[in-house]
Length: 581
Image 1: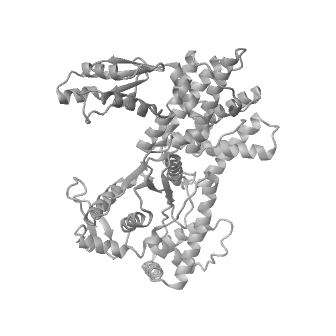
Image 2: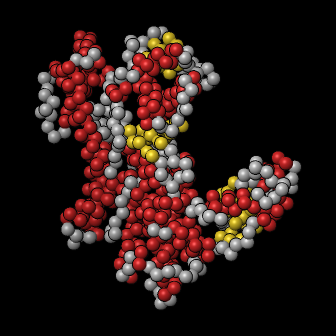
Image 3: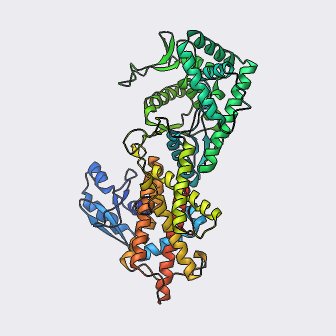
């Protein structure tokens, strides 16, 4: 049987092949594998119990028949537990063969490729133009980037789309403020978006104070939406300045996009949305607005999904509907994933329900639609994180502070380093710490932002994982070899620490699979932390540089495989590593 890098899949095939040899088993039998408790073994197959109940068979006798049909193997042994669970206890020889199959980085990546690659669109980050990115944007940005890397690692074709907020009522106010203040967009200084943000605040204050100002702002918006040459030129300049500002943040974080199709990109497609949904009878007019109700849903039967406001203007719902239609038609999207905060759950629930009804009536294959939502970043006072004057923390300021704090750590530990090297290490450590602090939390929960915790060298932090990688580099520097130069390993893991580390490494594909299934990066973080902890125990208990050359080769081999997995896992999270810390 072909060896599978995913051990759950491997043993599912083992049981399935045994089942094919039994007359009492038909195609409805599906073994369900799971990682078992240490008391019972390494892996456990269920399937005999539910199948036996459905077919009036004795589940334990069925399990025994399956075990008897499993071909004998020197690398693992089987037993039966409870009413019919089949346990697989892995032997050290199995882990050695598995780790050899793991191979180098390229071979590891090859084993992780999906058997059914898909065309996936990831919609993440999505800041508003004319505003600076603040701490509230970091979760969507780094969760989205991590998921893009995770899916691309498995061979999916991933399109990264930054759906900018670059259209709407706010631009009427901003254009009004620019003209009233007689500001030149070519002379906004080093931080033009900060100036634009201040202008918007001033304009908002003016329209609240004066009905005349409000009407003038509305007229500026009408002119923009009607294609007025001056207003369109100003709008384009605002968008370009904003994109330049965003790109500074993205470049620092190592985040990239294939497209930045904001709301404005779909402004000429919204009439088609109204037309189709009205023709299909999906939307209805209610108090002058076009809305969608979903009678089959307890809450959305009365809570309207507004797709055109009573004043005739489009909104987020309209452009989001047009966006899905475009992504399906132009990009052949099979799965669309939105990464936004949890406050938008109702919006996306209603959006997805509306799209499914639309596409069913049009006989269009509807893509899988997923809302990857997340909680709030809190300050140590358990309130939304703010500056001392109550404003949102600017994202660039946060990232720069992370680098500055990490720089002090590097300087204290290695004062002899050149300034350029200090800065390089500080950037990798500081940005990695911020990223990991976010990604290591269950994204559906709020979490407290703490500089001391995220930069600690102990505990579930990026510096702890980066230190584990650096420690392995140090081991190979001492032995004077690279991992690729290691001789053939001829003995299997024997000590408890060797076997525990080998076993933990073997769970990497399962961690990747579970992370993908739930679209929760913290699952991968938990695994990487446990692997680093297991390696630390191994390193502290087992001397690597021993006289017995076979034992030394085995332990160096385990170090090399640990490093491959740690570096690959961290790269999925967008975190770089160092050879020395």
